[in-house]
Length: 62
Image 1 (cartoon, one colour):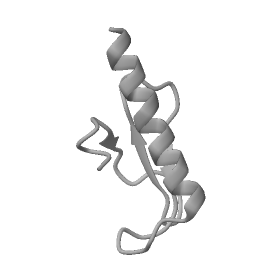
Image 2 (tube, one colour):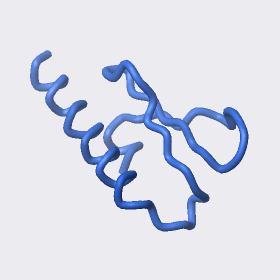
Image 3 (cartoon, helix red, strand yellow):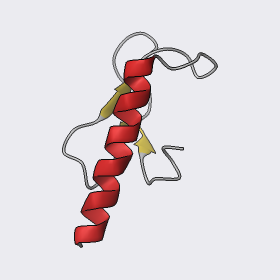
Image 4 (spheres, one colour):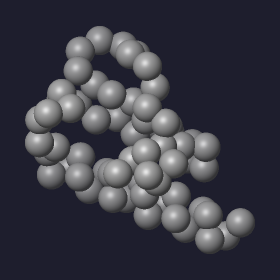
């Protein structure tokens, strides 16, 4: 879902199971905890949806 929206997964960064994704139109990275096979926490789902909406709004302005 994130790749489809244009996010880029950064290679291993920091400790533990956190993954960092960036988007050229966002000032901050999107940080998700847990392994790929684990379900996302509800607050993480909200963060993902919010970030994608923010990207879509930025793209519409351009």
